[in-house]
Picture 1 (cartoon, rainbow over the protein chains, first blue to last red):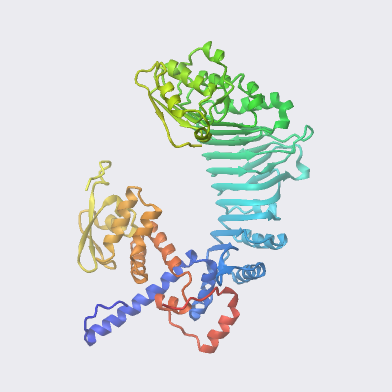
Picture 2: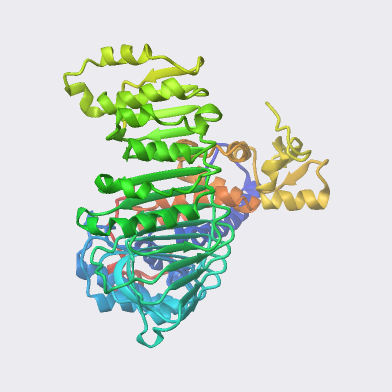
Length: 459
Length: 160
């Protein structure tokens, strides 16, 4: 123990020795307390500390396997890692595990072996399960859906899970899945599949395939955040995907990314504040553009009470006209972010957002006809609430200048316009200084509007 | 320092007396984060000086500093790195024991991780010394066990 260099007499020495005994037992117990924070490989090596410690690590409640962990200065060989994992699981005595994490990024493994490890864990009342693996795995759907101890589940891996008619996990609070293909048990074609997670707060599914013929009903009354990204590249007419229906009452954040081939129905969207909709449609779908426009409308209609909306379109620009017919009115929308829109679409959106405060354009407008703007009615928000306009990716072309002119001339309550030149602009032969001058001298409807130019090109 | 002007409890300060007789003040909202202190307050009232026999004047100011940042929501990775930067292994152990005694969960978990990180490539001998674990193996027993568990050793660093 640290000494302060002061000489001590006998009685003091005895007290000090006794105190040290107490302190050393205390300190030994610290090791037990921190053992779950120590990488598993070091935790296992505590078995050589003393007799007492031989078996202590086997009752840890946290197990984290990561095959990129360094072993003698290098990553473990595949056989070493498998051997290590097997030995740990063999000696493991705890009948319940709080946290199990399996990150396999360095090698490819025998799928059935890894699946055995996962089954072992699922049988031990695991609460937080995290699996990350880039290759194919087999996972017993039955054992997974029966593991009612699960509080957090993260699966980033390729595997097929077959869904029974009803799944219920009463403790699940966070679900994050990616790369999973859901199929249905063949006997259940007629009924909806119900996934019931009464305490789920966060649902994130990225790149999963929900290829069931039936509809999927998500009963998630406590859900606050829902995020889904689905691309069904290989869809053909004969393969119709079921609708995903989300039953929630407290949803505040909604995020969709996909090609609109599969319907999402929000059965109570009144509490959603923030939404992000990213639509990615391939060129070869142009014959379906009308139907997809209809789907887009259905989606947007469900989130028409949001306060913040990010709406991004990829690859649909050429056919975008059809999407913007029959847009819903976004009565509560204060903040809108868009990437690529036509002038017509932008106008339509502005008209449909009566209390808009902030507009952010990531890539300007394409195809803005001067006469469209000339004859356009001034949107309601221009006369009441529209205060901030951020124009990112400004190209100083005819369309962009036309838009800026229109804004300045008509937005009566505009306070700030920020223009961010596009990256390529500095390499073009356009004289930016002159463009700035030109813009600053345009007539302004709002006397207190400040126009600023950012020198840093931003995305 | 500026006082929080919200509820009546948050502007109140509590007096804590360390095992070596020094008195420190903390905000009542910080005291709430230390369950042992809160229990003592519940039993003894918040007007008297709360005695903390197992925490000393070397550690308590650091703990108070941590929770002062916590109640204003300012704990960042940078702050935590700075917080332990100048502590040696023994000092962090004593701080950890204090956090454990005070049942101060957030600090406890942070220091647990920090101690675990410090031990990452230390030798078995160092770990024994650090936690005061007495080696009760015979040399033969120990070498046999090490052989059996060779799969779990990942490269021993020589003690400094």
